[in-house]
Image 1 (cartoon, rainbow, N blue to C red):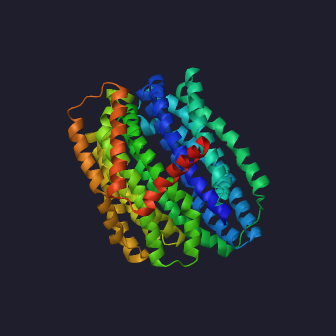
Image 2 (image 1 turned 90 degrees about the horizontal axis):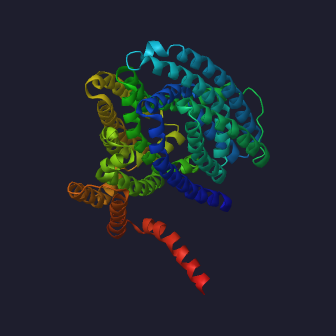
Image 3 (image 1 turned 180 degrees about the horizontal axis):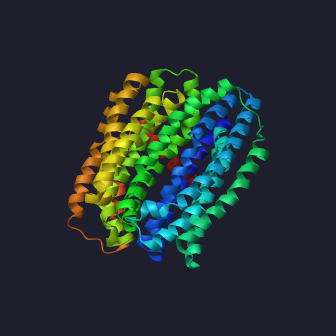
Length: 512
C-alpha cells in the first residue's frame, strides 16, 4: 500500500513537471514552427491531424475498458484472467490497426472531393501525403495503447509519466530537425511516426520484464465480452463527442473557410488543451483509485468529499490560468505569434470559460464510469455535440472560427454545466449545491482580479517580453497571496506549505 501511495504522489508530481514542460516547450517551439511552416501549412497539418483523429474512434472506447477490467482482476489476484483480457485486446487492436490503414487510404483518395471548397489544389496534394503518413502512425499507436493501458491499470505512474515527459521533449525536437532540414509538415508527420516506432518496444519490454504480465491469446467468455461491450459503447460515444466538439470544428473550417482559418482556430484551441491538462493531471491519476473506492461501495458522503476536494484544487489552478489569460492573452498572442492570430484570443476565451465547468468536475466522470452509470452522460453529450456540429456548419460561413467557438461554448454550458450537474445530484448522489457553494465562495478573488486586471491592462501596452513577464509574475503572486489568505482551506494551504517547508528544512540542515 505504501508503494502504491508513493507511486500516486510521484505520479502527480511528475504529471505537473510534464505539464510544466508541455507548457514551456511550446512557448519557445511554436513561434519557430509557425515562422518556418507559415500559417497555411500549419493549418493544413492541423487539419490533417483532425481528420486522422476520427480513426481513433475505431477503439470503440475499449481503452477505459482495459484499465477497468485489468484493475478489477488485479485487485482480486486473478492473474490468468488479467492476462487473457490483455491478450484479447492486443489481438483485437492489431486487427483494428489493419482496418485503420484501409480507412486512411480511403480518406486520402477522397481529399479532393471533401476539401475542394476550402483548400487550394497544391494544399490538397500535400494533405494527401500527410494523411497517408498519419494513417500509418495512427495504426501503429493502437497496439501501443494496449500496453500503456496495462501499465496504467497497474498504477505504475512513475514509468508512465517519465515516458510522457520523454515524448513531450523528443516530439518538438524531432519536428524542429525535420523543419530545419526543409521537409516542412511532411517531415513533422514522419518524425512523429518514428517516435511511435521507438515507443512500442519500450512499453512491451516494461510489461513483460517489469510487470511480468504476458498476453494470453484466448477468446473470453461471451458473458464477459457482452459486459465489456455494454461498458465500452458509452465510453465510445464519449469519444465521438470529443471528436465532434474539437476535430469537427476544424474540419468544417477546412471545408468551408481556409487552411489559415484552421490555423487560427487551432492556436486558440491550444490553450484549451493546456488548461485541460492542468485539470486532468490530478483526476487521471486518481481513476484506478476511484474505481477501487466505488467497487467497495463507498458512501455518497465519501464521493462528495472527494468530488469537492479535487474540484477545489482544480479550480485554484484553472481560475488562475483562465483569469490570467483573459487579462494578458491578447498581448501574449501578439508578442508570441503576431497580429495575424489575434482572433485566436476570442476563440480561446469563448471556449475556456464554459470549459471550466467540466474541468473542475471531471472527477465526477471518473465516478460515473466506475459506477457503470455513464450511459446517460454519453447520450446527452452526443445529442449536444450533434447540435453543436449542425449549428457550427451554418454559423461558420458568417462568423468563421469565432462562430465555431461560440457554438462549442454554448453547448458546454447546456450539456456539462446544466444537465450533468442535475444528473450528478439526482442520480449519482453527489451534493452539487455544496460543490458550487465552495466554488462560488472561492471566486471572489479571481473575479476581482480579472476585472481590475482588464481595466489596468487597457492603459498599458506591452512592447517587450520583459515588461509582459513582470506583469504576469505580479498577477500570479497577488493571486496566490490573496487565495491563500482568504479562500484556501487548511488542506489546500498544507499542499502549498509542505514542499516549501521541506526545502527550508533541507537548506537549514546544509547550513548547519
